Image (tube, rainbow, N blue to C red; front, side, top):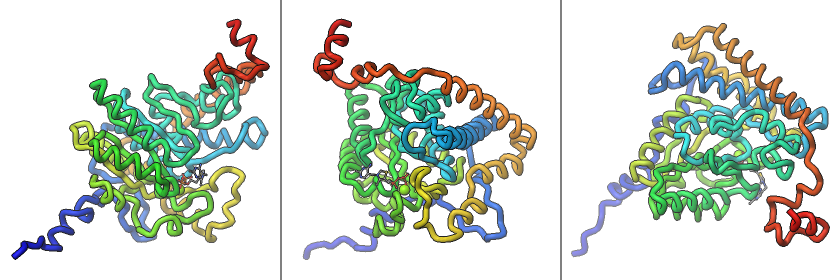
Length: 374
Ligand SMILES: Cc1ncc(C[n+]2csc(CCOP(=O)(O)OP(=O)(O)O)c2C)c(N)n1
Ligand SMILES: [Mg+2]
């Protein structure tokens, strides 16, 4: 008689067993003030470094909003308010030669990668000295030498791009890991599935951070997906999935570090879902009228990633209040200096638009003589 596998056993070796909730958000009573996980390999110095990045992200974004209201910013302003810990904690787990590709809510990861506030201000104001020389906005720029791959707007497409980079790196015998970010909306695209699947089959060292921040534009995640957790999709690719508390910077670091070590050792791709919340609208122009009353305020009061980390640092005696204030003052000094630098920098020359976009032998006719001369 044909032997049939025990269905219970089969389920155990399937996706249920491969999703780890070790770093997932824990339920706490409303009266309890949340902190961060204590089980960490981070040194005190590294923790203060993380704190600096969190404050830098929040305060740079606040300054950009300020500049936007003065009509000095070109295009929209996208905030990561309330979800800064996801980007900062995860990117901090990488080596400098590893690659990242952020989405719009990951300014914190961009800073961890070594990009300076002045570059972000100049980019938002479309200045000539900005990284894309006024050709594109916000985080849409890249530096290959820093392992920073600028995203294009098309959701999902950076997953197969990063997969390709990692395949190329393997062929060149380079030992790098790639970290790609995706939103709950972006994770519904075909490109996401194709990229993840290829990375899984090839056992490429791809770490994907899927940010469950409750909205894609005005669409709540419950109308975006029929499953509860994005991490469950790991089962479809045969890779490990993790759920992490995206507002706990230490948990975000630890889970990513774990995934990075696994991927670098040849384990292959990993999907990490960060549970967080987008406290602002899609962009500054969005008044969030689709958000239920009190929801934003709830997250602000009970689950702010910076408040939580400050509580952790003080409770664990990693720093005094004075030390944290000093770090913040230092960050503000840098922001003042850098935003002034960007504001006083020039706008691009019109003909610069012809360079660095297309093959210069086929530039638009109006610019052709000048470009061919040079
Ligand atoms: C393929 C594709 N479809 C639609 C859009 C328009 N769009 C830009 S951002 C966005 C919402 C993204 O939501 P999510 O992926 O959850 O990221 P979040 O903004 O929440 O960080 C949409 C629909 C796009 N850029 N690309
Ligand atoms: Mg989203």
